[in-house]
Image (cartoon, rainbow, N blue to C red; front, side):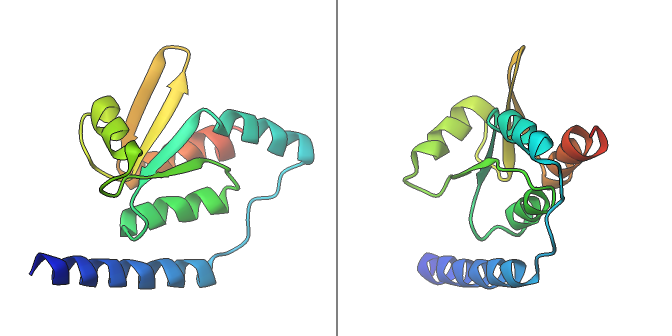
Length: 126
């Protein structure tokens, strides 16, 4: 039974991801200098995610729209990033944005909170 649930979940996730890819809009345009700065700042961020998770897809879609080259880390069973998420963030829940700053590392859960953070930091501030 668990096999069939996993199969259905993965199939639906793949369909949602496919629809996301074919319906994406255009990326935010920045000057080359601004994009280099954004790319440098993005190196301090990592998105922990599941490929077919609708909330992760929503977050990745915003990252694409805002033209943010943030590293994506898959936390499926067997992935080394799964344990990293559990140890750092305290739970296996996706999406989760790992933010390195001067005070240490912050773990931000929830797609709305992550998208709001990215919008405030990279879109509104520029």
